[in-house]
Amino acid sequence: MSSQISDYPIQPIPFTQAQVADSFWQPRIHTAATVTVPYDFQQCEDTGRIANFDKAAGKLPGAHEGIFYNDSDVFKVVEGAAYALQVAPDDGLEEYVDSLIAKFAAAQEADGYLYTARSIDPANAPEPCGPDRWSNLRVNHELYNVGHMYEAAVAWYEATGKRDFLEVALKNADLIDSVFGEGKLRDVPGHQQIELGLARLYRCTGDAKYLRLAKFFLDERGKTNDRELHGLYCQDHLPVTQQREAVGHAVRAGYQYAAMADIAALCQDADYAAAVLALWDDVVGKKMSLTGGVGARHEGEAFGDAYELPSLTAYNETCAAQASIYWNQRLFLLTGESKYMDVLERTLYNGFLSGVGMDGRSFFYVNPLACDGEYRFNREAHMTRRPWYGTACCPTNVVRLLPALAGYVYARRDDQLYVNLYAEGSARVQLAGGEIGILQRSQYPWDGAIAIEISVEEPTDFALKLRIPGYALGQPVPSDLYTSLDSDAAAAKLIVAGEEAPLEMGLGYATIARRWQGKTRITLRLPMTVRRVIAHEAVEVLRGQVALERGPLVYALESADNPGRLLELALADDSPVHAEHRPDLLGGITTLRGRALGADGQPVDFTAIPYYAWGHRGDGQMTTWLKLV
Image 1 (spheres, rainbow, N blue to C red):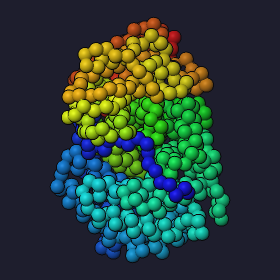
Image 2 (image 1 turned 45 degrees about the vertical axis):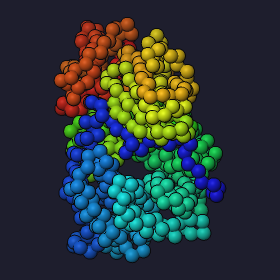
Image 3 (image 1 turned 180 degrees about the horizontal axis):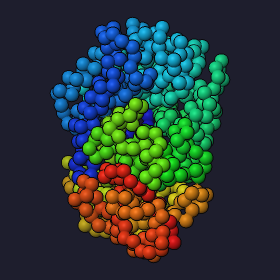
Image 4 (image 1 turned 90 degrees about the horizontal axis):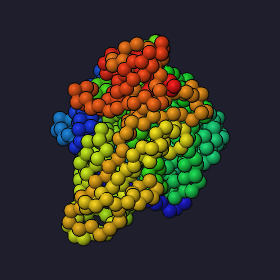
């Protein structure tokens, strides 16, 4: 590895310096912080996940309870709790997490090892753990678990200033650094995650050995250094810098690709950058559902072949959508191109948000684009919105993202301020020329009118860069995978200080470069027309079908609004569809109303709701795609 350690050229504005106060995201953020975090902790208590740490410390009798990767769920909820304290301070929650951290420290072995599935009874550890430490890395999540611990420990330190959990994490990372590396044990985890955690430890401590270890685990993938490769499922089939096609388990892949972006930026590694950008092209050009979901196959929770994008049988795990969000944000920070934020926004509003119920206590593990009322509900139990899962990665993952969502809205680079997402709220941003205040007012995603106020104490020169979403330019996604049939969609408009201004575009951003004084008001109007979208001809199962979108939202028809066989409905290409806001429905949504043709060819009125909102009104049919006639 080069001795030069750099950073991303663009930096996100921390969520602690930005606030989201809109009617769409703020209730979700508040629910995640005040409902989902304590709910997840209670589930971890009830299922023995937390008791396992007391057992490992010798404070409780009994065998390990649950699955060998259950430690990770507890760590993820702690990370979410760290973010939750920033948006909803809670002394009781902080005290509870402090008590958990004491349990983690007590369960940690003297040399730093922490893996309750083995420590409770090393001679009788669950079979997937392997007979000895590090002996079954393809399966056992031994390194995956602690990768989540590192992220949680850094988050807790940054939220509270307390180092006790960070010291547990550093002691463990130091142990792993002493075991793995060139001239030491050369193996890789079957489930990537430790790489992200190690990079975060490096950013927190400045100790380059953690970054070197993260890069080691990535560099070793696809190389037979006295070991057997773990294969395509684990993205361990080729060296990562030679990988150009997204294969295998979609969550593992997403974490790997996010970590590769970290190495590309922090180590200024051009080979890593070339590989991770090519992998993104493969996913966005051939393997991404309209909702941003990834992972077509139930078998292996995996990517399929190019253009294998089923609706009814799509897997699209919630965790995979979240991993995609992490990956796309990093690629934006690396390149400054809006197309990565376009994919992030599509995934955030659709493929991710569908995974957590509005109550904060019900979850989808799988997010297909259609449901016939038979296939879905006759498959595994994790295919319906449920209060919990035996493998609880999705319920415990969403609390890591939602409370920190404000950190995705803005970013900065020298004398440039990026606005990446539109949500009412505010931020204070330090640029090269001084501190900038920014205030957003909007009803996005229901309304495309966004009012922005920039305030400065002293006259300041900088460039404000407003992302113009691809949908506003007639391009649903930054590839030819999906195409809008509405080429005459209204254009975005920009008004600066009361005067209409041209959209001076670059890399997907409208740039306003000027000397700013006092307060300046800007209005951005994004088109909120209903758009009809079709898939690439190579997506065989979607030929002759059409989907509806408005703004960043993909729409779906659900049985609760549309009796009959939804999957048989057809939409004429000239049939009008109009938007109608329903403040009384599903927390307040904008619906789409129109007329389709039933199986008998007779017209039938239909109502479509945002895809993320489906599954809240009982079981039934659902579809995002209609036949096109």
